[in-house]
Amino acid sequence: MTPPAAVVLVFLDPTFPQGRLVDASEPALMATDQGATRGDGIFESMLSTAGSVRKIEAHLDRLESSATALELTVPGQDAWRQAIATALAAYRSSHPADAGAEDQQVVKLIATRGPDGASSPTAWVQVSAVPAKGRHQRESGVDVVLLDRGYPSDVAERAPWLLMGAKTLSYAVNMAAIRHAHHLGADDVIFVSSDGMVLEGPTASVLLAHHETADDGTLVKRLITPQLDSGILPGTSQGALFTAVRAEGWELGYGPLVPQDLLDADAVWLISSIRGLTPVNRIDGQEIGTPALRGQLTSELTSIYSGIQ
Ligand SMILES: Cc1ncc(COP(=O)(O)O)c(C=O)c1O
Image 1 (cartoon, rainbow, N blue to C red):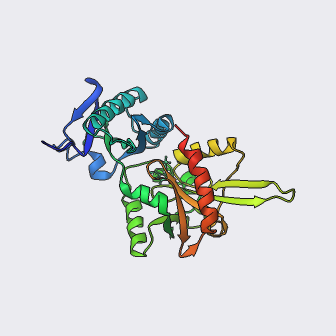
Image 2: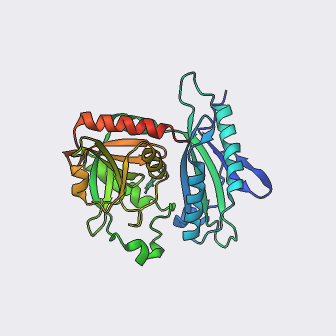
Image 3: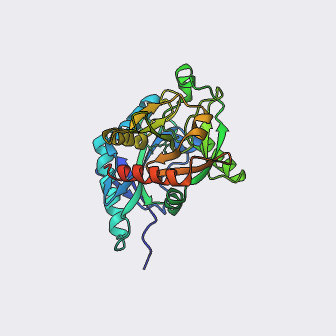
C-alpha cells in the first residue's frame, strides 16, 4: 500500500472553485516563478486543530496586508477558505488521527508574483504534519541569543521598500540567524535593532512578563511586547493572547524594550502560531527569572492561549 502523501497541495485556480488538488510528489511550479527565483511572494503559517484553523481571520487579514505592501494582487479570502477546506479534508482523510493524539496540522498559504511576465500570482495551500520539535521546545523551553538585525527601529517608516512587517517569502536571512544561534549552542534568536531595541525572533514574536505585588498588596501581572511600529511582524498569536489576558486582569504594554528589560523580566517567551507559547530559559547564557515562576506564568498563559479559537 502506498503511504499517504506527507504534504497535501491545493492550488487556487479560477477554473476550480474548491481549489485544484495536485500530487505533491510531482512538479507543480514553473521554474521561472518569481517566488522561487526571487523570494518575491508572501505566506502565512497557521495551525489547524480538528479541522478548524485557529485565528483564521487574523491570518487572512495579515496575508492581505502583506500583499498590499508588495503590491501583489492575491485571491480573495473566500477562495483561500475554499482551498484550505479542500486541502484539510484531503490531508485528514488520508491521515486519520490516532486515538488520543492531537488532530493538528500546519496549514501554509503561499502567494508569489507568478512566473516571469505573468499577470496573476501563483497561490496555493499546503497542509503537513506539525513538527515534533515545537512541542519539545514548548515543554522544555529554549536558550536564545541576541543578534543584531542591522537596521534601526524606525526603518519601516523610512524605507518601506524593505517590506519590514510584511510576511514575505524571503526568510533566508531568518533561517541563517537560527543556524548562527545553533553554532553558538543556542536554540533560537531575539533580534535587536542597530539602535538597541528588542524586536522579534526569526519566526516568533517576543513577550515578557512581570509579576509584582503592589503597595496595597494586590498582585499585578503585566505582559509586554516590543512596539509594533519597530519594523516587526504583527504576530497573530501575540495579538490574540493580549486580547485574552486583558480579560483576565493582566496589564499590557507595548515597548520600547531594550535587552536589559528581557534580562530583568520574570519570564520571556517566543510565541507563534505553530510552536505556541515557548518559554525562554536563558538569554546569552543568563537565566531569566526563576524556573518556578517561569513555569507558573507559562502554565497560566498557556491555559489562556489554548482557549483561543
Ligand atoms: C518574524 C516573525 N515574527 C512573528 C511571528 C509570529 O506570528 P504568528 O503569531 O502570527 O504566527 C512569525 C511567525 O512565523 C514570524 O515569522
